[in-house]
Amino acid sequence: MSSCQPVEQFPFLNGVQIVKREYIYKGMNGQSVERIFTADDSYIFKPLTNQKQFGKELWVYEHILTKLPSIYPKILAHSVQTEEQKSWIVLEDLGKLSHTFNEKAACEVIHLMSGWHRMSTDYLNGAELIGPKPFIEEVVCDLFQNKTDILRILSELHVEEASMMNMYTLIKDFTFTIPPVLSHGDLHLGNYAYIGNRVVVFDWEHAHLNSPFWDLYHVIDMSHPVFPKSMTTEIRETLLTTYLDGSPQLKARSFRREYYLYSAVFSTWMIALIVSDLENNKTPWTNEQLRLQLGESVTNLTQCLTKLAG
Image 1: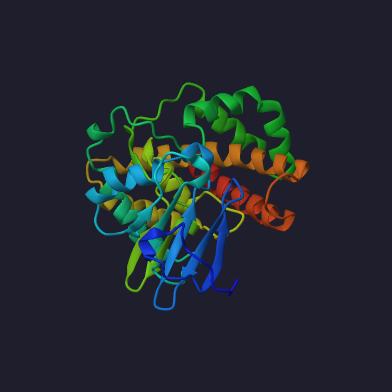
Image 2 (image 1 turned 90 degrees about the horizontal axis):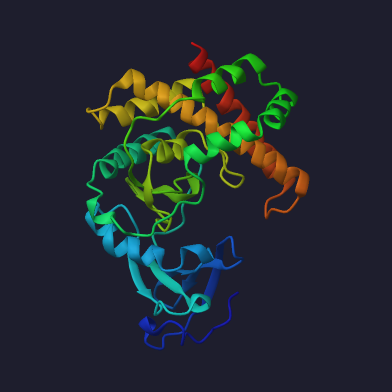
């Protein structure tokens, strides 16, 4: 849209008119994030895009992000946090972003990640922060409850049954040993990008306590229907090494093996979810996007299963 529009809903502009709006993406509740232009500047307007996360992004900004290096866009204004339907924030506009997978950018975001994972989490006690997906323990239970269907699905996708049975054996009584850390929560390829010569990380509203593997899995192996990426065994090893270089307290061999198992478990669960989405046709994404996501998930699962078997 290009017509001038009044901006009573943006008092921080002091009556200056919006001369153009540019669609960026649509949230899970149908609300659109936009770039808004005045005659002299531009901003990112973000209404509440997930009803369950009401007030979370502002809370995370005020209580968590200010403890980090300047790797996030600043919040310039926000609505009074009382009515969900009118909840919004305005962020600084860092410009047009590229979300094409880049190994160097992934290494840099993982290096930054190792830093926020080392932060004390004592100040988060009592904070009601939740992630967008279940914890690994719930996922493992789901894989066992639906084992027959999952093995059938993966057989149809030409994943070796012996490799899957090995994974099931490994997770039966397994406990992940790495303590929970501050997790970004939704660190897929669309939520970080190069700005000039630095990496910036966006959309922190899903920040919460979780396994360090959750953030790592997003950057390395979680597929996304809108932001495709091609992962290889070699790149995965480089990215894990980057994390371990910033986390000298970890034992590299056991950490890698736990990551492969974590990734295999979540990729298996994601594959079942994507197949269900394709069958039900009730997602905002096209079948082509979902099939590409499915193919990436199967490839990543197979690579991690191979590592576990080795």
